[in-house]
Amino acid sequence: MDFLFVVDMSDLKSKALITSADNLQIPRTTSISPSNGSATGNPRNKCALKPGYSLMSWIRLCKSGTDLSGTAGKILPVTNEELARHNNVNDAWLAIRGKVFNVTRYMEFHPGGVNELLRGTGKDATKLFDEVHAWVNYPQLLEKCYVGPLKNDCHKMPLKLSDPPSFPRFDWMQQRSEVILCIHTYCFANPGILLKHKTTEVKTGLDLLVYVDKNWHQFYIELTGAVYWPPKTVYSNVETGKLEIVLRKQMPVSWSSYGTIKSIKVEQALKSEEEMYNFQVLRKVDLNHNSFEFNLQSVGQEAMLIVPIGYHVTFQLNFEGVVLERSYTPVPHKYMSANGLSSASEASTSLDFLIKRNAFGKISPRLYKLQEKDIVRVSLPYGKFLLNALALHRNILLVAAGSGITPMLGLFEPLLKRNINRIERLLLMYFNKTPLDIWVHDKLRMVEVDDERFCLLNIHSYANMEQFKPLIKNTTTSTFTYVAICGPDGFNSTVLEILKELNFNMNQLQVF
Image (cartoon, rainbow, N blue to C red):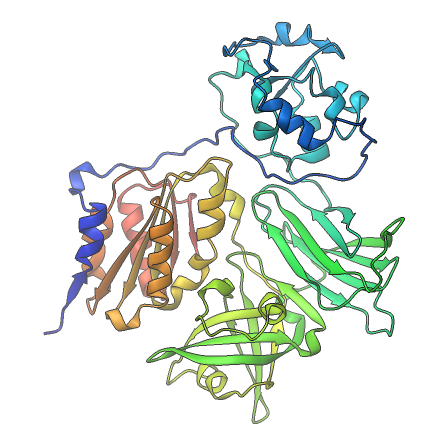
């Protein structure tokens, strides 16, 4: 038999994914709706609060049943004229993203002080809010202060996200034993970083490269005191675009300042795929009959590299005097097997890959033969994927074949956990020749179990690429407004042809 085409029927029964072609809905653009931001704060420009006016005191007041909105629980649409009348310390309203809040009682609780908050009262304060602390979860913080929608905006949705800043903003926080360096970009900026410490006896110097909007921004940081290396953790909040680097102080004392910083914009002068760094093999184990897990770490843990979602790095390997190169996409560490790296430090500083071993390939068989501590040259990340393009979409279709699953794995968490314009439906159609070829099947099922909005549809096929056209055409339970595709060239071309036949908006898709 030269044709076998199988769909995992358990997927279809549980999710009822197949409908007739006549019922296929052609996607339309979805606008973004006002929703939650991120629950983090900004320590800069803080004022000393009076006793009894801490954040915990505010939370207790919100839970006390006090009518903080002044509307007796009613939702009242507010005109711009009405909003303008509430513009003083004893009667203060402001609007953020079309929502009006009575912040009169919040005045004394505001960490930036009363005067700073008064700058936004009596008007739409969205722009001011975004400039100062766009990552603050204002809907939760001011939930009990909600008056109603700004009347002029009742039926309007934002058509785009806020304009990005021209340069990442630096900030810092500290505890007695830790210092936290913060780099603020913008919502869904999808930043990448390369962090290195200066090889001196006293570890106070850091070199930081931040990638955002196709440019690299370089920060030279000299800390007030010595810190331990590597960092305790480096955290990237995809939704807010905020990066946090947590470093442990060698001496647990409070610092009067973080130190000094110099920053420059590198722009296009730095070609990511040509900048190479030495990494060593930490671990290599079989994934299935023809694929393996591959963990790398900077030699001596001298550097930490965080690759933007959907971006790639180039591996460079010297084999018998010949330089071999190939691009690979890192995956989140959670998709590595349970018997992973030996320490949290290794896990936080490693680059993790799932690699198909092609018997006739130039580089994958040689990568498979590498031993622990063998060297692989790795480039800075590069790519064209714009994560913020997905921010406008609630129903997203992912179509992957074989190892094309790798860029998709990084999308699940930021999409399913985002608060702005919450996802309604995320469908992964995963094509493989046989069930034995499926990568991380159990972990994909766990994503499905944990979040009912995610659906996995496994398709097993020896067929000609043309044979699965009807399946893609007929697989929908809602209007998908964005499609991401990754697989062999022939697979990608066929999926694109199908979408064109459906008159899909070709500006609303990504081919990795």
